[in-house]
Image (cartoon, rainbow, N blue to C red; front, side, top):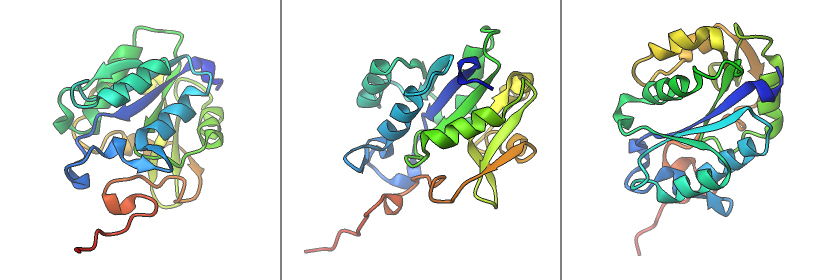
Amino acid sequence: MRTERIAAVLLAAGSSTRFGEDDKLMANVRGKPLAAHVLETVASMAFAELIAVVRPIADAPVIHRKLDRRGYSIIVNDRPEEGISGSIVRAVEHVMPNMKIRGILICLADMPDVPQTHYNRICLAAEDIRSVVASTDGFSSSPPAFIGRKHFPELLALKGDQGARALLSHGIQIETSGNVLHDIDTPEDLPGWRPVTPQ
């Protein structure tokens, strides 16, 4: 499916409790904030709409500014404790009225190494509104993933932090290396991380 029929949904509202006190999405990865890698890669593609689900502006002012500059529609999830499902529900509610959009591409802001070519492979594998296309490292299904409009009612019923995992496991699987699908959950996951040694 052409990207012009798809809304890209960037999920960036998690509370990142495993990361500690610092804002995970602002962590420096290769000279820029973690979230900037995904938001710039996705924004460089010709999607029908760019959507980002984020925490309130007071909690993430820099991310809001970067998203705004790149043309994202910003949806605030003020209840990140609901898990990833709450963000997906908000994005689907936003997209539903636009009948030109045939499906959504779910992207995670903490996956800085997914190249544009992989996002393209996911979109090209989607045939119609019934399609579900997931990424896999050969072991488990994960975003980035395409979910067609026919599945929107199912997405609206999601609860908790499992997100659309069950739906993704039944879809077409686009395999890539685990390095590409690596997500940042703790400071130790950051490239080049070293423990702070006491002086």
